[in-house]
Image (cartoon, rainbow, N blue to C red; front, side, top):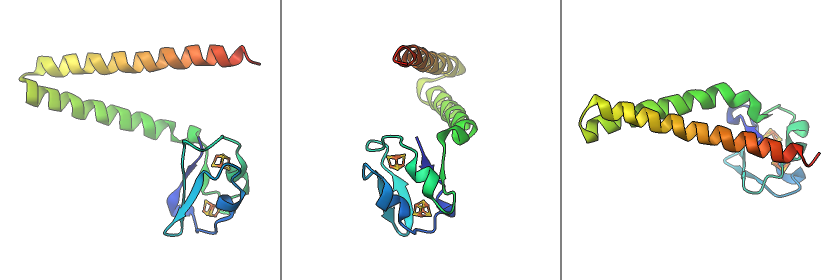
Length: 117
Ligand code: SF4
Ligand code: SF4
């Protein structure tokens, strides 16, 4: 999904006017995209004069970092609330299972989508 790098947005409103699904809002002179309504057409990315609308592929490294930090926080909370370091290890195992499940869903989804080509 596209996303807005807010510090680059000047609030011109061009993307709001041109978005075919009305997915972009302007608040305090900064655009934001409602992902529920976005149809991934790419119009906003192509027209933004400030190049403030970015591709989601550019956020992979940051998203990975967020996931790792979130897991570390959860492990600490498990150890704190449940008693010992063993609980942190179990927590880590659960998170790895969680991301393995997401990977499986993504792989099977891609297979399904490629069959539509
Ligand atoms: S077109 Fe670009 S600069 Fe203008 S409101 Fe949209 S994101 Fe901001
Ligand atoms: S990709 Fe298309 S639908 Fe999504 S926010 Fe941009 S212009 Fe709107």
